[in-house]
Length: 154
Image (cartoon, rainbow, N blue to C red; front, side):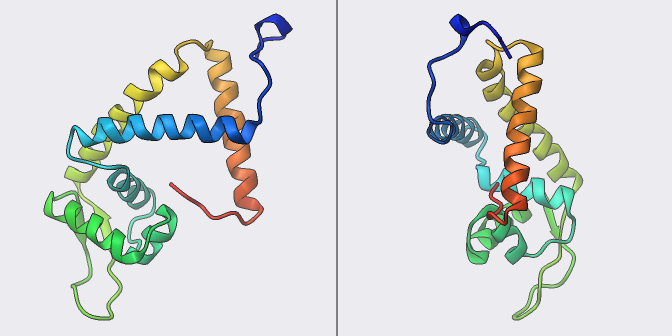
């Protein structure tokens, strides 16, 4: 971080700045993914399943902040694309156990590139040290909120 007060941006409410920046980044990422026929919900589902194989629709929905029914529709699209495989058979009252396929891992990699294409210009004006500091601070804020019992959203 810079120590020269003349180089510092005007003060602002951190929460409002994060909201504004989050909205801009989210819209850009959604636009980039949409060009590939994908969405943030697809990215969220694949990301969570790649880190925690076997999650159910309900668990995925909770992590993404959407209903299990909404997540079912998203996962169905991923299944049709060959990106996700249901280990347990479909059926009323059964909990689906979902896994990312090799196709899904490739798709997740492509979506990561889409996110990077939005992230790069955002961070372009920051030094490598400032980028690392920003990542560290944002991670600390997120981890602090999770410890305090705030709902997880992705």
